[in-house]
Length: 304
Image (cartoon, rainbow, N blue to C red; front, side):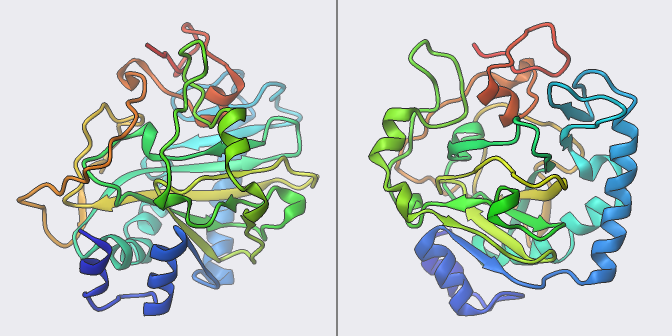
């Protein structure tokens, strides 16, 4: 659906001004979407997974581990597909966050993927400037990602930053000069962006961020000794159809969770970069940006 068509529908959760801000800037922040008791329940489950990760020594189907991860000093970069591993996460994914998605992609919503990212102040938690849609091209640019802050987000712990209006600009090549997938912009392309305009989000736990799949975003390394977790869920309009293999196939992927399936595909005429063939395996953006491309590593990125 076009933004005009989306805005013609009555909102479920967001205000009209929040919806217009999203379409204007490419992202929006909504405070206090989740309360203290809800956050406490989620943090308890997250803590259980951190404990489980202490028994792991390499990244696999559930955990993406940073170099130096150990039982005594767990450095879990990502819990992959959290909605698959605990019912609470699917409850969140299919609950109010799906209503938020409907306010921004239209009444017919498809679930795309979920992930739980961490920052630990260990030197491996910077996320370079990138755009999402090159990881999973669709027939249009409705896909978006909703981030739920499980702790307060500040500049000190690596706040998520967005480049305003970048969703209306260029779609960048996220391969390096050798043809290796990096999942981020080159230094040359970053120099062409006005990163001085970056909006770093500082908000309290329970807030959500929503950004469009074309919006340039990233986060600096954390300077805080406390870990920070960010739960991310991606959705698309039902009339947006993927045309490359899904990076993280899982239950509910492609499922219509609001409204009805689309009978017609909406095609945006703007082209999209094609990523590597993810059917050979995928770990995370952290691994791609760090160049961890060992083809024998479980769940590793295998560029083609």
